[in-house]
Image 1 (tube, rainbow, N blue to C red):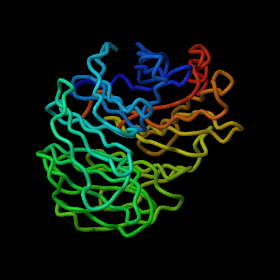
Image 2 (image 1 turned 60 degrees about the horizontal axis):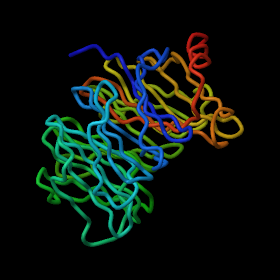
Image 3 (image 1 turned 60 degrees about the vertical axis):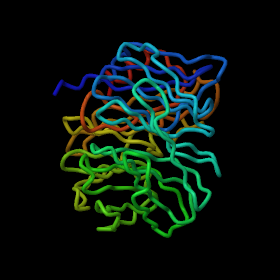
Image 4 (image 1 turned 90 degrees about the vertical axis):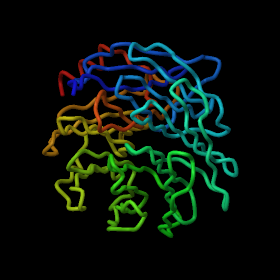
Length: 336
């Protein structure tokens, strides 16, 4: 497998810019800007496929964008009727998203050419869908805001396989299945592992309210508000880091092929500036990128996620920090 060299972010200036960065955070390779008339804001997770194509869910314009490895626009998918928070992609280039649209919430499967393959809706109840992911057998997992913390598994043809009710009035914030779907993890205020039949194997109460999950071959990673936690797949805690510079709330995580964990979130400074931390496999701190709010259009900028490229193990990344002077960013990296 090719060496991982990049991660991907978006920046919120007058409109959100999408940038491909070198892995060490020293500089960006290219940037892509959507139609400025749409005032777009990306969803909370985007993904990169094995060939380096990006799939960006749009929160404001309610569209999905496919971007080439060189930063060129490929297509825009315009079917959704509500804001989009996450996206997923399978090994055949089909992508997926879920809409946050009350009675019209739906899961969309999109062809590699940007056309609708199928649309799945919840028939028995109105709820907002937020989180989505797909395993290597093309089974889709989704969940969102509800009174029962429900998780749904959908087959490759768009049919419901099972639903799991955690019976907690909260929202499913993130989902990560094992590649073959032998089990799936999801989190709201509690972290769950379910088997392939949708039966609970174990659950763990999070200490601060679970936010995001990442997965590799041996370990599970959790962003738990102001902490990052590493578990094995049986739920045994390996380490916990509650000393993340310039970060009071971690929103998303991604682990690279060397076991380095990226945590994106918001700083504890006045105005809530964007921040990105990287931890080594032992949980020690590597470096921090801090996005100073004085360059932004608002007083509250937040880094919501991260994606790594390439690799089997990945999760999405979006940020809405201000547009930062890159020289100052590099100075932060070098000093860190």
